[in-house]
Amino acid sequence: MAEKGKDTMEKLVSLCKRRGFIFQSSEIYGGINGFWDYGPYGVAMRRAVEQLWWKTMVEDRDDVVGLDSTVICHPKVWQASGHLDKFADLMVDCTQCKKRYRQDQMEDPSVCANCGSRELTEPREFNLMMKTYVGPVFDEEHVAYLRAETCQPIFVDYELVRNVSRLKLPFGIAQVGKAFRNEVTPRFFTFRSREFVQMEMEFFCRDDGAMEWFDYWRDQRLRFYTETLRIPVDRLKLHEHDKLAHYAKAAVDVEFAFPFGWGELEGIHHRGTWDTSRHEEFSGKDMRYFDQERNERFHPTVVETSCGLDRMCLALLCQAYSEDMAETRKEGQEQEVRVVLRLPPVVAPVQVAVLPLSKKLNDDARLLYERLRRAYRCEFDDGGSIGKRYRRQDEIGTPFCVTVDFETLEDKAVTVRDRDAMTQERVPLESLDRVLMDRVFA
Ligand code: GAP
Image (cartoon, rainbow, N blue to C red; front, top):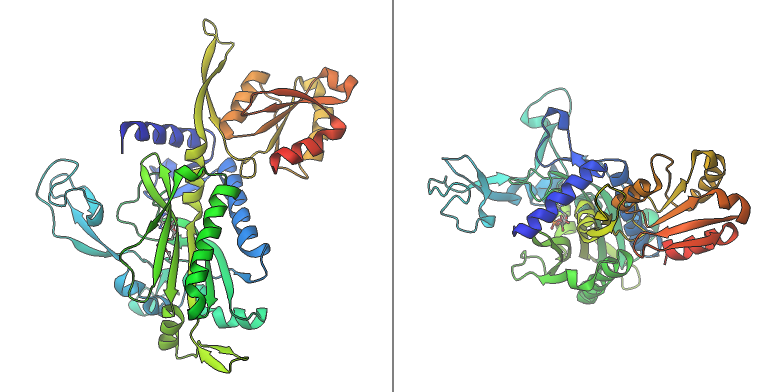
């Protein structure tokens, strides 16, 4: 990672901890590598992003329905999917400094990048599935796995879901949930974790129209990043895969310019008929679709959109992190560095903060807060100087602060402070809802 990128990541990780977005799991025990907890602001933001995805992919459409399956399913699912045989990385250890690498990520596979030693072990296969036991006996018969991707239960339940939803091809099934991978080298904060949230949609269609659907979903997903999440186009790129799984016809990744380099946010995959065919083979159940109009039975082709919620949030945080110079009341200084998270209002953990200028105004300010919180994620903050409160809200990315002062009692108006423009505008209480609505959901 270049020095500047490293610096930005360090600052972001520290802000996330300081303000309670994301911190190490089990920190008091020294943490556990590859596992992260989301604090109050982090969880609010992550839910907002998830809801936007769900609304776009499921609620706003007639041809996609939802599913929420278990994390543990029948172990045969993972035999059928190929995960038990093939879901492995090659890992290499340095015998001198004990550093472990994923072989495909080593710049020079013959030298340890940490200590320079050439004493490296032979590459060994390392299966990424997380293993557990179901029931009181811990033997091979009772082994089960935590799901490595959320899509497999979609394929397993596909016929049930299709039946109850009375859907005809083409249609999709979407799921959001935890996935687990025993990554050899978890790194770059939450980018590569061992427990993470996936948001996947499997779109079942006829093979003859599948490539058009592939193009359609690639474009839809790009629009989600640029229009819904407001990520600038020049921070995104499409990366087409040259090496494809034997059953796939196309695969493209949406990548984001992280401070540590381009990294994958989402994959759009043409999966052919592999998944339902494999589950038919392993379960013995007919997984074909029956087309009544044409009186034919066939395995539908699948186009998948698969993204990681944690990576999406990390991209948003990286995109939002900024520093500028702002006025200060600190002695001997006119300006100080202001850290601002320029998050789009739709994903900001707090969309509107209500700040009474004095505790004497708390009753009126609280009434306003109760009214606004029905429509927005709101926070009431009456602690410390107004300047400090603005700084705090800037750091957590609050786009609008509504300040109630003594004049409010007279002129029935409040001051709306804009995080990015740094403007302070007097807005009559009666038009406050409309003004905020226009700006938060612009
Ligand atoms: N069903 C296809 C599938 O799982 P993938 O490329 O392995 O494809 C899809 O994963 C997405 O899941 C990735 O684009 C990424 O956003 C997220 N993801 C994968 N592994 C991850 C990890 N270890 N930590 C965080 N997110 C991860």
